[in-house]
Image (cartoon, rainbow, N blue to C red):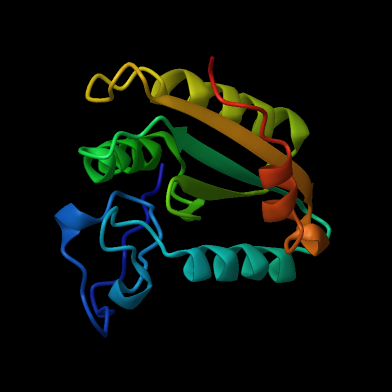
Length: 169
């Protein structure tokens, strides 16, 4: 058995990100493209990443999920969104692009994920996000998905938003 080692003579150049701030395999988003309240990518950065995925692989499966948080109280809304954002980051892969889509929604671009896998991811996110202990009982989180191929990248966010039903009753 042979082991490959990273060549010792190569060095990383440019700005370094603290190791504790980045989970292994996660894409690093520049600070100017990060939502200050949640630490996720901004809407512009999220949509730019989604379109880049579509350009790179126009015939490959591509999915977009929208996580909507409803029932936010006026007092702890931002705290609740921070808890949801942190949990979404824990539940997604390093290759997924996660960002704040609107004030109370998050978007997730799933590269190489078709209909079945996107449905499974949406169900798993719904299950885990609605069980966050820090959230108030009046809050409800729903996850909606739209799936296509890379050439559909621009239409996937609107399609995912259109599939929302009234939140938990």
